Length: 261
Image (tube, rainbow, N blue to C red):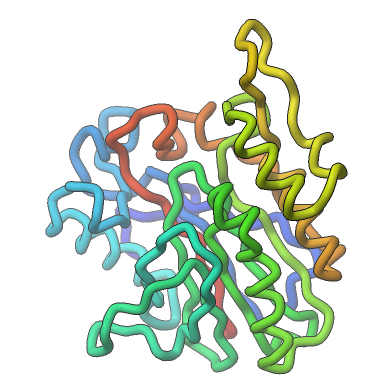
């Protein structure tokens, strides 16, 4: 593997029921070449993978090449818009028109579903038979709008049986400040059960702390996905490990990726 990007730099999902025929990983801000404010937070180069955040494009390309050594194929980078559209990862590539969506699925070996985040929730999916995988980008709008359910539906239409999911690094329950509009959006989506995922923000009337991981579990349970893992990595509280838009404003993007071997 490339010396600049080691296994220690990457996030390996704690995902006990992931089929052996499936590969998955997430990146951090470590192991790249990007300069501040896209660096690694420790004085070295950062592994920013987003071309849309005003980083040096050559640095981003170099970072993507470092990541490539860990993957069986080119990641299906899609234009994310905080919606709920799901695309076929096999139709995404440098010779194809840019695909807009917030999730992708794959059914063939070597096709890599990928999403970029910097506080939003990345969710990776696999069916237990190892035949279909997916990756979803769930900001609060996309999460309330049903992007996880749309991904599950697309996977089932592609032949998936029972599905397992892993929630990657995202802004945690003690850092995600929201207003009543966010509470209302989730109550509208899944009913009053959503309210337990919000706490009053001490000293800030009318503001709440949202638990995106808990909300995702509720949304997934509604769609019949009970095997859900991860949810323990907060981007905002780990400045030397992860990029965080809420924390830093101008910052890089990390990726979550999954494929059939």
